[in-house]
Length: 172
Image 1: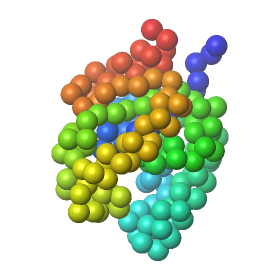
Image 2: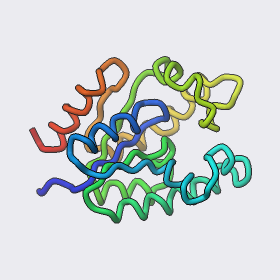
Image 3: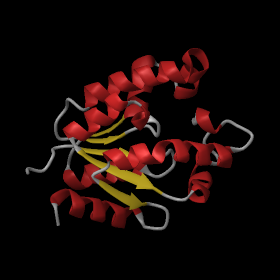
């Protein structure tokens, strides 16, 4: 089997998809895309605004269109939004068109990384820890079902995470 041309990163918000994605793109000299940033560029507004006016369903429709577009490209690194795996069509697009890496870490670590980030509408709640636990409970099986490889980003330095992903990607 030949190596897929694309690497897609999935996982909850705050696990490091954008950070790791940029480093992978640099290592492989490939373009990097972030599906959430692309949605913001296309709409001209930030994600919390989309959630406010269109709700999560409106956002998910936009996300699906962007993922369909991006998975048609070849030779890219893509960081998806944490909920991209909710839709079966997204999971299928990712699985059929690239090497899917599930990044994960502890909820404590995610809370530490996201505590000052107001651009995460799903965490704008009285109990972000409970929300993250609920999201992980809902999504973990979906992440695992479409991942070709998984790695804990909580305690491992990003350079080591990138190295391990590249080893798995190249089949070593």
